[in-house]
Image (cartoon, rainbow, N blue to C red; front, side, top):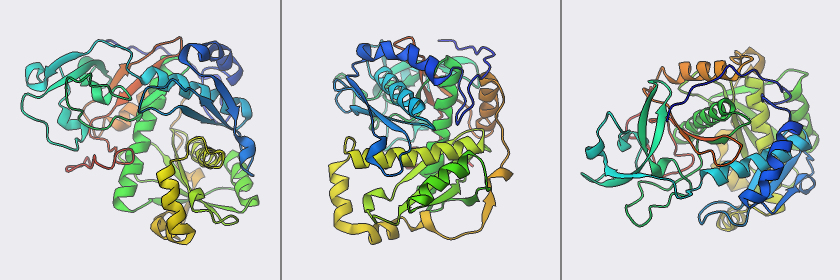
Length: 392
């Protein structure tokens, strides 16, 4: 595959950057819901006293091992509804649909044709001449075709009984967009976010505390939490790049429910949008928990057994006191064009890695991609994939 970007100007700036308004996006994706198997799109906002808009799309025919529920959040109800529906399109598109895959060992293909699987932080040694499935990708940094292990592309990965999986597949770097450029940018930002979260968890270090000024969208959202007795601790996570990743740790001081000690994160070239994404992700996690659709029963029983105080001690690094820097002091790297934003992001990521790979998984009129950055950490998604050597 070959991927070239068009000079695409952003058109919507309310809490996010998009090429279309939520109304325009809804018009495009609503007819796709039946095609991808979504049977209902429900509002979850009222399940939580915060009343921050959250929606859930239900897709009962999701592949075995994939989630049937797709959550969405946003500044307003329409943004949240569109977010849930776009996630449903993204997850449907990321499943294996009989795509053609090459079947060969890395030794047969060689470095010129394929990505060395060892660069994907494997939880087990790769056998000599072990045969794998491979999917075409495009290296954005070197502008060349490269085959990628299919295990890193599809979720859930179906080995078709022909090979042993390298690792449990996940959705990291899987994103949809109104246009290809939008999808690629958001997929790349998610990979950066998960790398930062993985590093923070591994090092038990949340980075630098953030303070927020007296006005603006982030302050408005923080006040909703504060008015409802939910303490929010904002952090700027350490990362390999200069692109801000913000984490929001939430402590419900009213209910003292251990399942509501949740954290959200967001990565964006604009630090305020990163913070808004982190905060709305907290709201989404709370609403999903309180509604019950996406609750992990095993985790729920564990939380009930250990209780609020012990759960808070386990996650004490989230709530640690530290000097804070104002979010307004963090440089805003965003431009007015998606292709330029991609260029900024690649410039940062390219300082520490040699490849950034994109696989086109578009199945409908909505572009969907998987972005893979070899060497970026993924243990936030898969605890078995701990790097033995780390990028600086």
